[in-house]
Image (cartoon, rainbow, N blue to C red; front, side):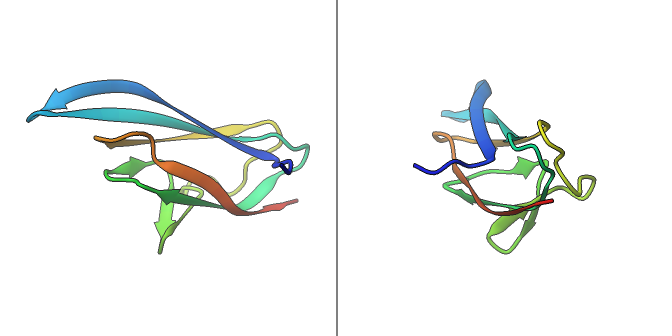
Length: 98
């Protein structure tokens, strides 16, 4: 296993039933564990079956939202999504340390 300076954790923070299905709201925290600033963050997200808030999407990759250009050392950002399934698969596909 190799060290990654970026951690991704997610958890279901709410659930409800609608028309016979259970929907979940997942909160996802991306944390910069390095002592440098993360720029050009790219996330790959698979098995996402609903809306997502807090990231920008281009093609099949997700990026910082328009109001964030970098993630300073030790800081985190949160995004959320809703769908009627287990948590989506999220991985870091690219970044720059500055």
